[in-house]
Image (cartoon, rainbow, N blue to C red; front, side):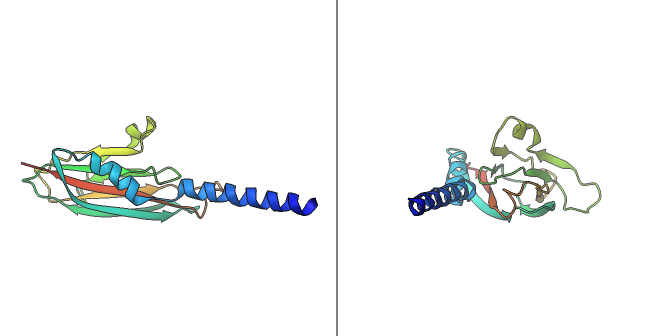
Length: 160
């Protein structure tokens, strides 16, 4: 009787752990498809990038430079549903460390409303490359440490 109880408890624990991992694992294809649908019917796919991050107890960040043409209209889409903790996304006109850098877009206000999908339509008259910064604050919750998550970025340009 004691063995069968331990066996059942072990199976239940294993099932619960795999459920937690399944909820926080990143299925980038599903997240990308959600963004692809936001391009239709007026925009065509241009490029995408999936950024995978392991959650740590130190602040993390990175920057992506995205070249754009001033003759096109763009739609930049972000999906953070595959990330189990807080993330900040900011778009700038210049690279980190350059003088006169200006913030063009931030997800902060939309994030407060509970959104996980974000859209930015840049005006590209004055610059050829925009810079996307991801900032992941330090995490102190032991349950989150070591988990992996992803942020999906997808860009499209206007047809016609």
